[in-house]
Length: 91
Image 1 (cartoon, rainbow, N blue to C red):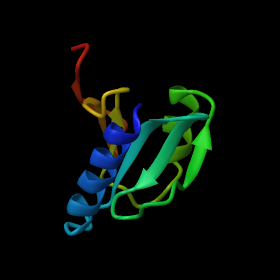
Image 2: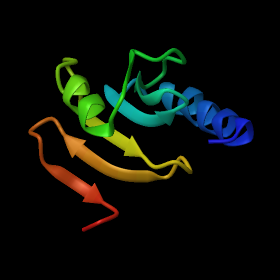
Image 3: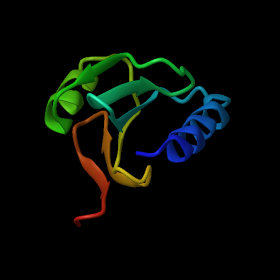
Image 4: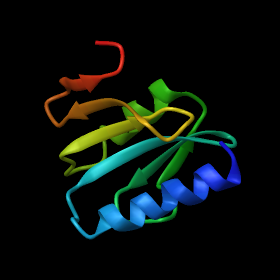
């Protein structure tokens, strides 16, 4: 992810924070996959794989959705609090 893409993604996080919706975002990071609570700029954690990041994010309660982004910042997958994939680029 370029600095420009990272800046744009951070701006989207700040805008979305106004909703305080309990969503958690999984985004590519320099050292793996970053877990970010919506509305908070700092990462909750960084994991080495997307699978590990999603697993860790599921332990954060309460959450309404886990939103997984691809390397361009686009939404790749959305997982609800019942562990259902409600949206996926691969579906």
